[in-house]
Length: 104
Image 1 (cartoon, rainbow, N blue to C red):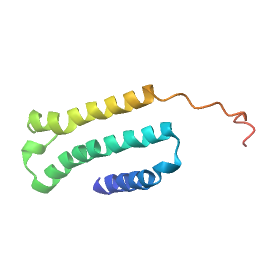
Image 2: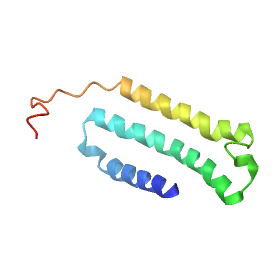
Image 3: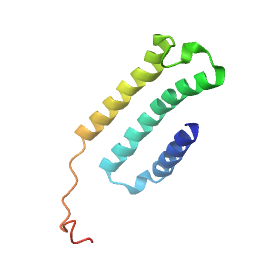
Image 4: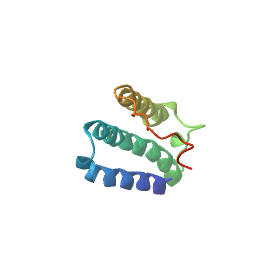
């Protein structure tokens, strides 16, 4: 699980370093990913803490609802809000003049 996060963070860093090559709207999309990656880290940490400590407080099924709410649900709500805001404020992509059958 941590490996997946590290891969995602690495891909984000690559695109972040090349953001000057993108149009303004594409920069907003990269910024949205930049907001969402730390939220993903909080969610991953919730699971990792339980795996490392074996403390039932951090168990998603039988553990305390407070850490679950703060470290899983709230980041998820913020994640969805950031993505929805970004998608809503992004104009649709231009239609390509070629149809999909021409590409085959």
